[in-house]
Length: 128
Image 1 (tube, helix red, strand yellow):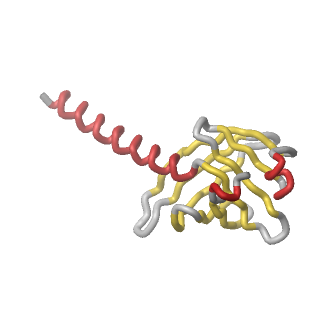
Image 2 (tube, one colour):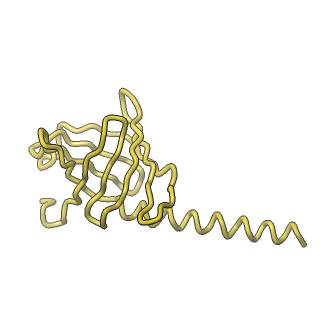
């Protein structure tokens, strides 16, 4: 009887965790402008786990001069007001680990070892 109860509890925990991962992954998928005062960089998170980094607006609009990699949602840290997501981007020359905090569905605060910046979602009408 204990074994069945333990299995049920484990299934509920894993199911809830998977639901949270799916929710945040679907929020993150799309094109984002990196709010950098010196560059106009863009990043695209694709549903299949691929990521594309564009160095500037020109390369973003022409879909050229970009870097490719993979991204994964590694961990969700529950917070009092908002959750922190730990995202790893696997690309050359090294992997980058970011902490993401959703301010709202169209803006993210991104923290890494060099500091913090913000990402703003690119709306569909800008994706020509």
